[in-house]
Length: 289
Image 1: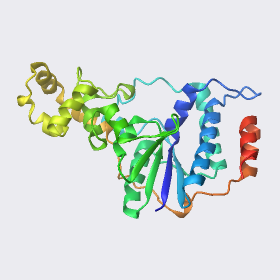
Image 2: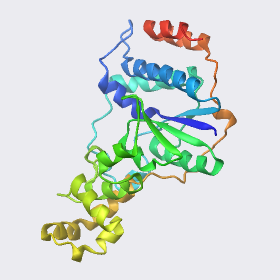
Image 3: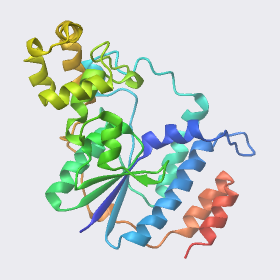
Image 4: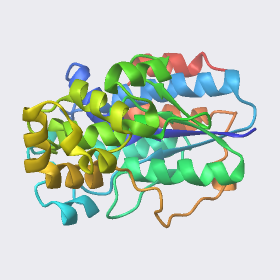
């Protein structure tokens, strides 16, 4: 079976930026997120070469901060701070890095990288291709199944069904139901005020879905919960639309273009690493066969 390694580049950029210390080139240009991304890519290449002889790969990018969810709710992610200027500078360099690794870039205006990943996950099912999502983003856990695996490059571990249960209190196919109730403060999604993940999971495990829950509010014994669900039902319905990843994007899927190069292009990568002054990465690259 072929395996597609799909990298959540947009998600990784932010995690690398905030997790790693500030690093600059001698000309003062910030490159910390670029360094973190390139280090991860080298590790990923090594892992693929060791475990997969028939691999595909690609990097999913956000085109812009605005997407179709802002048409549903203009306040979506309005609580987010502006992208730091020193991080903005690194976006284009990370695109150069992705190209230097000979990794195809996939993106679609009006959609987030997560939606692209969800669409590719659906496409691969029809083609008999397994997909491994490289991401530490909890929102992608809703895609997890026997054909769609998730590898967290920050913790360097595979996400398991137990990890999802620990995080959301439900199995992967019910994650969006819990998020609809609990909301997602990081994205400015409210959900039902006063209901967190624990209570949301309890309700979804009992009723099965948001729709069934809202149709049976009257049987909930706790008066306060009944009142909250009745008053804020529309917010939960809105939240579900926002947290559900789109898997129906019209986007190109060409296996030949996605083929993973087993032989690394040392010359191209060396030139890129030298330009960014990544001395340690150059040493790692030179030690690769």
